[in-house]
Image (spheres, rainbow, N blue to C red):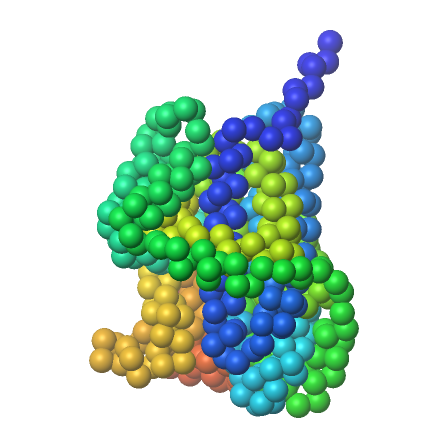
Length: 494
């Protein structure tokens, strides 16, 4: 007799914790987008009327699709503990598009609307490229060691998520440390909160109340919060089509930024899908990359300028015990919040120091998974793959002044941060191969690193021929070293 199918719930209590973690993370990104674009001189009509609604379309469509995909997996494997993939805008990609696409376009055109259209076209092209990359996604996933991929993701989690958010947590210690304590008790130690409230909700309520009690937040926050309330409909437009003409006639150089960051985005999706497989839920990486590409293109059709990806927070949601409900709720609420301007209102009312500790937990869970999912002998590879993101973090935070700001520390910081994802994965893959005494495989990865450096995907500010010659020679020297030891290994076997 066939086993009775289990009921996969639309929503459960654990989805609330995961919802707040994902929703607040997306809010943080969108507030950074709004503040930065307004600072660059883009009008509110474009920022709140086009860019944020366009991004909301992509986020909504992607979250709804991945909720459906989770239900499909639950039916296939007859399980109720499947967690839907998180979906949103990658922080590193967001900064690259802000300062590598939008800002140069604004400076070259001198016109905010034209610059926005160029960025929309670049976003559309990025989505199309990622959809095309999906054809080889599974092959790449199979041939890249798990330790290398998860180590690279852990580097992002350590710097851009856990590290950055711990800084924010401690900016107001009384609030941040209290909320962090609640998160550790409820989500790490899994102790029930009073009144059986979800941990994230309890933390936000207590933290926000504390902020107003101690005077960290006052009545002026409410007046600021409602300044941009209104109705911002989700409507398609032809900005992407007009931007294509501008892009290919006078701003082709922007595409040299789009290609490497799209490859990064595709690899980030691959890494995060790999992390979810390690946590127990196996999704098709090619399908996910295709969905991300299509979601990015749909967002561009509605005025969005930021590519989307399977989000690094997914493993955190898995640890929380979430299902598909958090993804459905995130898509619906986020679209509603964008259309009404509530995103800015919520961000103004709830202090950053209250939200930040939740995201510290997300980063913690991702780092822990990178080690737990690998044999102990691969820990050095995981650790090495994490390191390039320290340089990338410094670069991103200092933006265009990174070279001057960090030159007294080391001249290698900037070149190490350029193409950090590729460097992290390839160094990790070389280390895994050497640990396994597969020296020829390590030589292949070193050769790929040399090729990437030659064309500017790594250690160079833009694509070019012989873009980073010193690094090309360095990686080729590593390849020769590995080849030598492969012969030594073969000789010993005989």
